[in-house]
Image 1: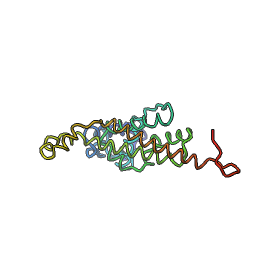
Image 2: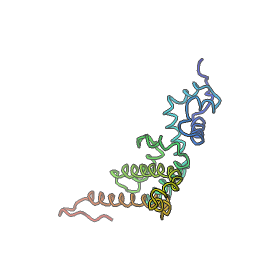
Image 3: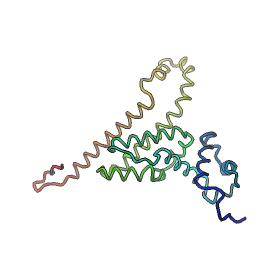
Image 4: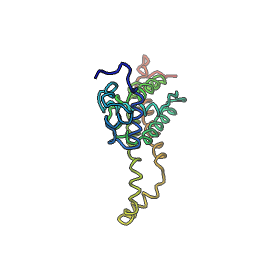
Length: 221
């Protein structure tokens, strides 16, 4: 049967439906057949928009990233808007935990322009040396993903505290009486990453400052 001239479904609606299935039933529940049933179409209709299930999964990440950034232009310096970007991404991943294995399995450049292109351009506009832009974004993305994965297992771990208290009371007490919450630890580590990168930025700038005729670096600013 030939494809209809007007698609029965849109790519966006299919991805939204796929994300809803993953949110409510888990990553394993998503299949071409399951998604087609949710949309009320034949599975073959999905191949008008997607070459494979993997492409659908990558598309759900796009939808989630759009949700994380909400189309708003960040304000302030890179030391202010970059941590906020990281918090938004973490918040989105925690809201869609089934996406975590998908995001963790993607390479950085597969995560799309919403995660890399816009912030990279803005970092360069603010004078951050090009050599540290990708390492900075890479480090933050890796930490956001690992932090989100860790937080999704905390609830399960806490359910085991009663049994652990009998086997290892000191460890059980340490887990119960944590002085910092996951959000506080996240902000502290993000600050440490930015401090380290900012230090590297200053070192890069110092090395790139032009020499005066006597072989000494000219003052900048």
